[in-house]
Image 1 (tube, rainbow, N blue to C red):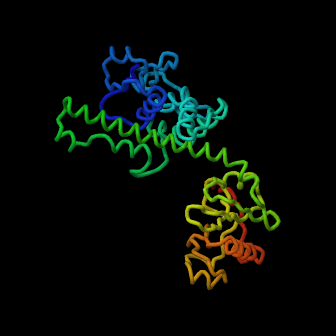
Image 2: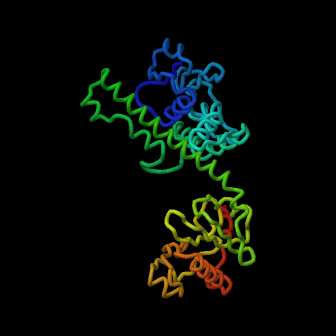
Image 3: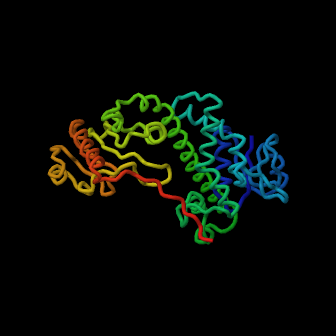
Length: 330
């Protein structure tokens, strides 16, 4: 099996697309060329060839008249075209490899949709010049672009076979990097799915305003935010650090605002200084942003949680109030 993509400078959309196919077809050869005969002979042609036809393995978006787009209107580039066809299969394969979990078709598809929304569509938008995310040099597309040989490499290697071999090696490095990005995205979502029941069954204290999790590694924020509107603070036990954490609950998915912050007097304090303010002997720290604190023992974290709730009840710590939408001036 042969996967063909264009030679010359590579971009995040073609590197992602080829990486997806290579996960599913690991024995396939990768050929980078613009030779029409080689493209036509390939089992897959990605970001080259002027044809979009998944049935024949053709995934180009540069041809005249191409108008492929998601239902949201976000246009497709090669990353999205391949992900649309093979994303669910790729998710299922990565889940099995990295978590030993067998996903049903619907779960794999839903995770593929989520990864498209979080990652793939931005690669496509960047490729077609419409992205407005991650300014500067550290958006994912910009990071991938940095793997291309620069003019100093070209002066050192020339423009023949040695240079092409170097560029192909760099392309494979990018594929490996993007494969890790995919695997991490899948592992996170599989972990979140498996954690749901444990978070839902966690001990609820203080009339529903405090939640205790026995494992701080469980991804809990989404389910608490969506399903537990009364919870203001979460105590969790960090097994790796052998201490208890006190967390605020994010109020929304797209801001750093909490339903309620930790007390202002704790901000930035550690050890004896924090112990003096809280009266908790084994208090360890409170982040300056007042979204997380820690104590060695459960009793210490619980005592700090009670103080945080008292600060809310007294009005010292205000509850989050959603911001009114900005109305454009006429």
